[in-house]
Length: 256
Ligand code: PTJ
Image (cartoon, rainbow, N blue to C red; front, side, top):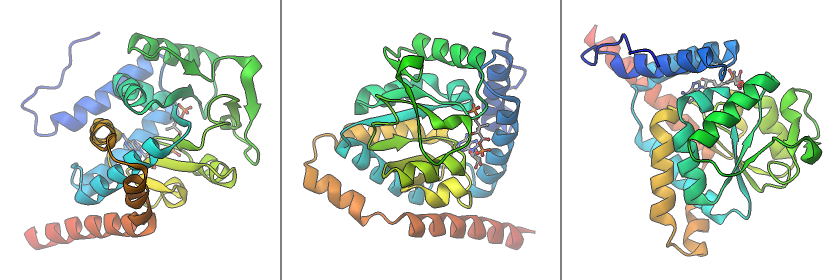
């Protein structure tokens, strides 16, 4: 890999390094061109959120961890951006939470899919679903390529984790009575608004926190986990995220 041109001392080094991961992922044939644009939208919201994991996001992470631990068959859906940003972290989350990993692309492309499978395997994934055509089936009520899912994965799952998602599939998954957990920096997106649990944070910051929280909660009984999920209100959590953005902007107004 090329040496990074971003000096560690740069005031925006962290954000630029994440951007660099995406660009490298594009050069390696993991990320769709549109994925670069999707990242730009995420960056803008991250800026407004103050580029940190808020208390509000931590509440959503706790509810997500409890929900994953309660699941019979949790499945993590992996797209190009996620494969470029955090393949090792995805495998860690899957191992800790006994979730399955399935590759599912919006901009379907066989070559890119194979590249994503390769990086996941290199990162330690043993089983990757969405790779065997004989096991593929269709998620009803969805026209995009995301409708093609694995019979033993997303199709059978009770909980589906969909980082950086498009709203259509979230709706189709909800109609199929699945519980949907997403990471989305945009609290206004259709995915954010439709999912059961929305973690409004950069997936690169939040995913390890989710794994750690799964570990921490793993010795809790079913009743305690159910209470954590029951007490979480996604609409309220999203509103709190929007309030945080408003407060960040207001603080800027006072500085100016
Ligand atoms: O690899 P593919 O073909 O499956 O395509 C993947 C993309 C991401 C291109 C596709 O799913 C897409 O077009 O997504 P959208 O509709 O642009 O939605 C992506 C959402 O993720 C937006 O709301 C962004 O704000 C948000 N987002 C972007 N980067 C991050 C993020 N959320 C959390 N962490 C990020 N790093």
